[in-house]
Image (cartoon, one colour):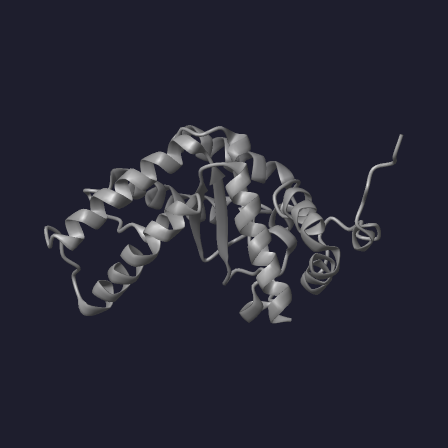
Length: 225
């Protein structure tokens, strides 16, 4: 009988909220096995740093969103700087979560992912046929970029709510966007809760897609170091 195999760089990583550079160091030296472990344990499970002063607020947030978006509370999580307390993104590495930060939520739900994907395709087709138009040149630019990237993202198993315009013709996206606004406002009224500037959702079709994409981001982060 063999003991469980653990990458050496992971053995000394025992903090709940390790520093971003430490995470990237372990991700780089430990290889794919270490990156997957980091994603599953440190970057998706447990109490996010932003809610460390009152973990029950985090659970209340998930229960509230669960009922409003028709997903299971366990399918809702938080990533970004709110997860570890500082950003892992190469251009913002080590930047601490604050009242000027965004709250990045993830929802791992096949049902919601399918609904968002279908809504994206419907909007994309209407936009390409000029059945729907942007309000100004800046919005036109974003729409064209999102229309191009959205198909690629869906193929990888995830989609950002912000990739679809908040329009009456896009009810699923509009519902998510409205609830993200309400979430920020409710947090402002809640004692011991974080005060993010905005909140947004990235929806994944499966946990495999979440782990794969987040692991790839970690690998990219180690390359940028």
